[in-house]
Image 1 (cartoon, rainbow over the protein chains, first blue to last red):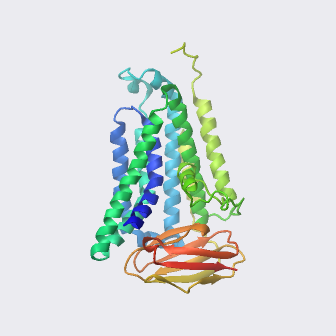
Image 2 (image 1 turned 60 degrees about the horizontal axis):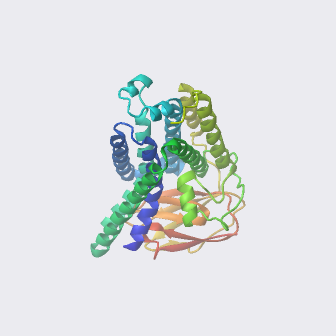
Image 3 (image 1 turned 90 degrees about the vertical axis):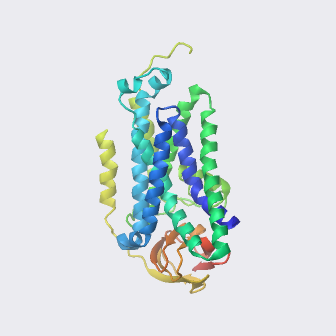
Length: 274
Length: 109
């Protein structure tokens, strides 16, 4: 039971951290919860569908269908994070200053909430189909083992959910004037990490051969499978043996997000001490 | 804005053509809780691909942490797994859903 718990938790942790950050970034946006839960629900349904067709998907692209699917999902999430981050750079300051101004959304154009829901859904889907496959396998085995595995799985899911909640609570406790910068920074890191992992999947599928040389090996110092490594991987796509393309994808995304945000942020006059 | 959305999508479509790398392929399989051959010995001069078959009636997941391998495989299914930048050494692998009993090793020479 403990083994199942640990395995499921490990799978869910990554999604949980991302969802917690996204939820905190949404903060008090109208209907934020509806979009978060909608994203989770869509992700779970998609996970089940992907798990059902896992055998078929695996056969695409010469046996690398799963890697290509993962790369596609990650790139979609990066684009959606970019859309939301750029939009927030344009309107976020006004939003923060006019939290109580009703009808403000209409004036600035609707915030791309759907983009956020898609990021949540893709985060769930990435780990979800494996969890579904795993739990299905556990349930198919017989008797006491099955029950124990499923109980372990349920606790693993619960623990993963707790990670989301603690992350969310931790970020929203940050003082109001910092929270916007912090969430923007975290979302940018998250996106850069996703881009790096997408690069990894494209290379693991053999779709990209360029820049697949290993840059360095930190597996002795900060192994990807250790607690710190798992956390950093979930947060910013950490790899202890990154390829050149992974690093390129990471920094290119970072630069595009930071430069894009800078360029688009309206030059606000410093507000008189609020 | 449109460009920002379209560019990565177009780039992905261009990259997504299944230009399969011509790695050497080695076969490996899971039977019950044992891997066959055990251990899997590979003389690697560069990247290689493992054609992995799960002969069990339950889903499995081939996981070799230090080789960056983590891929599920359905009951009776076969998957392809690329090992990038291999270095000589002995690497532990497991069938993740049964990681306490189903253990295997890959030796890279």
